[in-house]
Image (cartoon, rainbow over all chains, first blue to last red; front, side, top):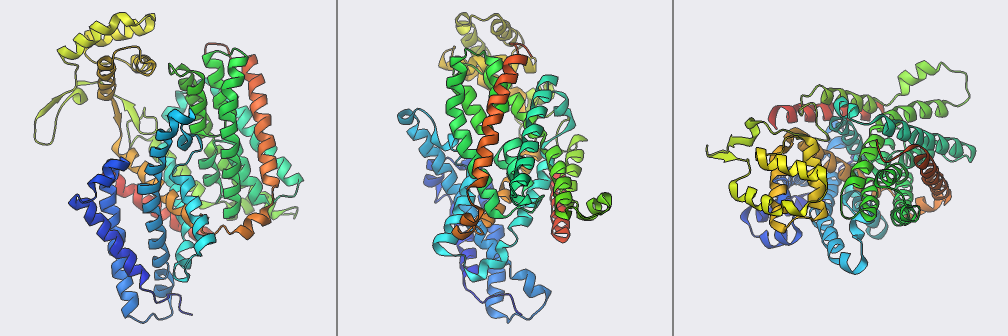
Length: 528
Length: 23
């Protein structure tokens, strides 16, 4: 049969995309971009708008004029309409809804007391799925787009493989032993608990698998990464993400209250939040709610958070083996042979990218997710494109501001760090950088003083361009994949899954929160 | 699934090569 459906829509969407890119380029949309604060996306608006728009116009025209004949060309090109459709939705979500929601979140913060957009994790990931669900349930996915929607899982898998490039061995070595042991127990423990419980209650293996990764590791991204490993259905992913976010929001409000009631210290609370709360954004939220005036709690929570995310590769491999074994069932088979024939190739791709990234070809070896510290003269004094020299050392007026403000600082470590900065006109170590970041967040100095400290921080903190590029690409692949997944979630499929995943996820979440509280109180003292 | 995984792997490696060469 012929798969390509004759439709003018591919062509129309292509024209819309190119027109949008042109309007951005000509500056006609400057007001909108300024309002949404999406200026940093202007480059990708042009690249993606012209690229996908151009492809859509060419293919759309050709499909209107030529008569499609059966065969490979027809089959694979029939996906273009759907791909362009998803990309158009992705453009709207990423350049429109996401920044708009962030705006509303900030605007409502004084009234609500918290930023609902970041608390509810209303970013492009969640909104992409929601957009897909709304489209399929309210409008239906048009017939000419159906074959393209079937490419969404490919996008997700490619994103997961590229995710490997963000990690490296070097950052594993920077983590404290304690955080690794603590997190290891709780991550692996909660994954094991969900797997055991799910199989006892005869939940589908795919549902159990994706739920265990979501509850065990770090919420949404873990669930997304684990989904293809256990061949999860889109509904199951949506369920897991719903459970995680609902549970995370509750945790975010309860943790600081419990922490204050028990009189916990910064480090103890940071360790507890980093272990017990499921989602990175909500860990940060709880840590900041507990200690709004400094970043000690946040830093500890972040260390635990990072450790937890780094367990993701282990979990993915574990789930792959578990799933293959479960699916084969109790038949007498050679497990090794089955593993070789069934093990997901893209998981190997993830590991391969991790190894490539560890060799340092994408960023300096000591980077954390692409950010690294460098205060050598090579970066402090360099020439810009026109050959003009840029000097990033602090200038005399800057130093005057700091000297005037220095009396406001009371803590000794902060005093010496500031003194060293004034003497050297640049930050001398990562530790000094961190200490003075705390001063900025606590708003101890005058506004001018804070501006100088931020300037000094930016001079020594660099982002590896290649890693930044990978992050952008991963975000697009995930957005594409999740919108497509959302388009496969109908109301009927949600009813079919039932409420059991929600119950199991919540119970394991509570066990983890209480368990980690007890262990942290026993093991963690105010030093790490 | 194997087929899909392989396509994803090739796609990712091509992208990584392009990033390595041009970014």
